[in-house]
Structure formats: structure tokens, C-alpha cells
Image (cartoon, rainbow, N blue to C red):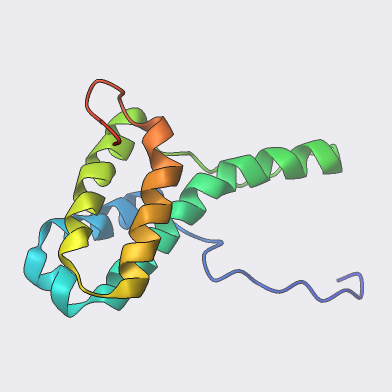
Amino acid sequence: EDGQYQPKNLYDNLEKAAVLQDARLFHDNIAVRENPVKCCQILCQLLRLQDLPKQQLGNKASEGGSNNIQYQALTTAEATDIFFGCTKLFVSSDASLRRLVYLFIKEVYVLCDPNDVIIV
């Protein structure tokens, strides 16, 4: 519009419910072993969902206006459920997926119920 090229992010228009539904794949060991790329995509979408509310707050502060799109971060219950589903991804031998699991756990464990999650 104003002469500047703004690249479009692949994960800008995510629907939280759809991503959470896709994350159920983590509970199927066979699907995890056969589709590590799909699991990586879902983890990236989950990470993006976590980043969108922070980014939205930053944009509102810098622009001084309001944005019509409202993104919600994961609730404690959702984060805890996905955390345990994510730990099942360690059955995969795919190195990229395992690295992404470590990153995801690091980012999401702060949202989980501290009585349910123990990080060693």
C-alpha cells in the first residue's frame, strides 16, 4: 500500500482450535515416526500461537491503535496437555523434530501447571 514490501508469514492466520486439534497427532506413535515433518509443522504453529499475543501487544503499543485480530495464548490446561503430548515426540529418530521438541518444551513449560510438570 505505502510502497514497502511486507513479506507474509505462513503462520499469520492460524486458528487456535485447528492447531490444537492437529496436535492430537502427537499421541499416535506410528504417525509420529512416519510424519516427523508434519509434527515439526504443528510445533512451529504452536510456537507461533504463543508468539502472536506478544507481537500483537507490541504492535498496539508502537502504532497507538488497535488491531481487529485478537490472538489468544494457550491456557494452562491446553499448555499442560500439549506439553505431555510433545514429550511423546521423543520416540522419533528425526533430529530436526527432536531439536524442535526441546525448543518447544523450553518455551511452553512456563505456561503449564507447576504441579503437573517436572523438568529435570
